[in-house]
Length: 270
Image (tube, rainbow, N blue to C red):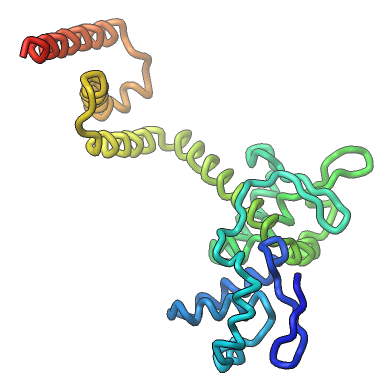
């Protein structure tokens, strides 16, 4: 943090993301939702991070605002988002469960409630999410349970976390939820998920043009295989490939490879 004299008074301004608290970031996010003008959004950043009313910044001269931007060059950099699984804060060490599947059931309910209360706005829900996911070790070496502390009180405490730590846990949480959601969908609706993924692969292949002989061979084989999978998703999920199926694929591959060799020979003779 840096102290400067601004408009005949001393203010403290941050010089790096590690000096921005989660509480400040939440307020900035709330303020940003109020404005559609990009210039006003930038002024909202200065207001939220420096604690200066946005009206006062708007009515300041460019020469008065310039020093603020000068000391806050970090705003041009993205907020750190390296996933975090443990951190230290105010002399205490906290550990984040690495796998949502291993969380206690009451943690799941609490996380769902936290997101629901904030209408699935992860930033606003982040203090509560961290309070639920990040736990300390007890004297006996066991990890805390939600029954061992006041979650709302700890969420209030975590509002003062540096945004670099809070965002790291937020990224870790989001990735966990994404993986867990995909696993749940695959378990409950396997055909739907597989069909969706096949469409994604098909879309990627449609953009693949040109390339050498081997590249074209692989793309062509994948397209043939994708067509087969799309027609037989349910059958393949419910059963294992039969010997006749494997044999047919071997024959298809041999025919296609023979065709590509002939094409290559023609090109060489030319």
